[in-house]
Image (tube, rainbow, N blue to C red; front, side, top):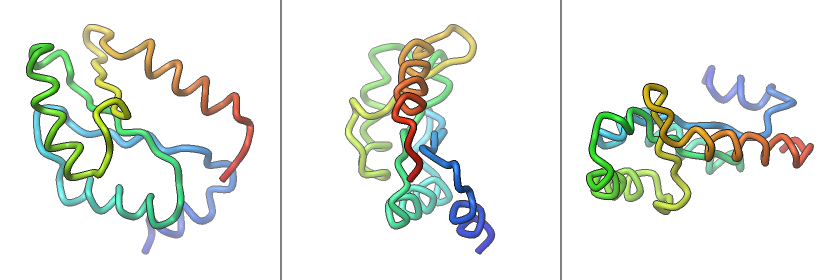
Length: 105
């Protein structure tokens, strides 16, 4: 499996950011990737993109099926938008946190 080879050989890999579209339930590919990362013990964070496309109130409703499918908690997901900057500070903080650990998996 090409994906498995990549992740096994990525010696400096510390963390994976899994991007999902907040407007849709996770795809089978999203679920498969999530399962793979868990099985391999690779730390990851789910980033729900396109957060600007739905209202702030709708975000929590949209996160529920993502949480169920990917087995994560709502507070573990970063809602993000490249358009209006939603979630940018949180994402940057997460990246800084990952880099500050200085350890590889």
